Image 1: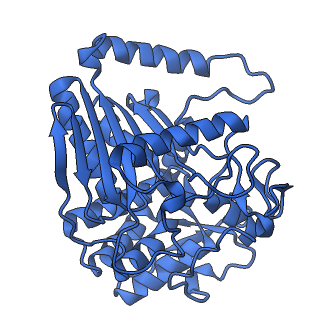
Image 2: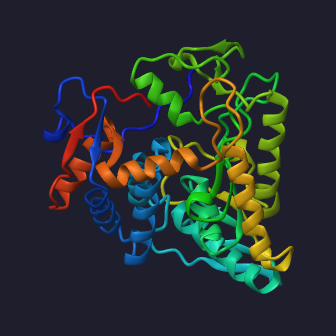
Length: 378
């Protein structure tokens, strides 16, 4: 039994920009891609502010080189809206609150909208109390966790973001999927000293396994197991993802995320959530998020925190390399990708570029100009 294949969300046939022989990816203008996303979301009843929020989040994530959680997600989100799994006009409300803490009900909103609402609420409470802890229930997939942690860091805070997710990961020594990929992101600082950790608690996300399968490439050792719980390098035989290694630590971290999201929200645990391919129409997936915001001004002081952060990042980068590769700080690869995208365009896989072309034609927009990257390796 293999991991469920992502359903085909209105995937078009070959389009004009995707005909270059041997091209495995394309450079696409970010503004053109954003315009397509905004228009497509708006056609499903999403209001102007939320359209911009979601489009910016997906485009920016692709620009940062996180292809599995950027514009590749747009067709799936549109399908959720069409089937009323995601509510295009949610009424996100505070259910319970006390000083620095709050529980929000997302009313089946798109996860990007719900997670951002939670992060903004956490910032408001941290500005008043020094700490803001917000749990969001009744939400959907919220894209890259760093979207939400960076909402808090851009406000001058330190932000944590976590989300529950449907079961894809077998526990250590286990055979069947039990936990979600359950990501954690921590962000603080700005500019060249911005610290952004964004990681799954599995060895790899499901999107990467599927991309390897589409390209006919084997998995890396330790990424996944087959239906009998044995390690496999074959994407088509992958039945469960493996927890971040060493496996007992990854399993523990995944359980922490489940506890801080579903546990605090009184929401379904990972194995009780519907997979994207299996969710029925007319109701949200009941995903839960946890947002924690800390204002350094209430602790050692904001200037002191910024100084320590700069020292931490600079000292890490200056560490002597062991094998000739530069030592990096969390967020450095994404920042490099972002700068390259600003010069040349964002890098998208063939399937995503075709989906954008199809959406552009449907909504009467010019198809984004594509430039092939024949040797791109995700």
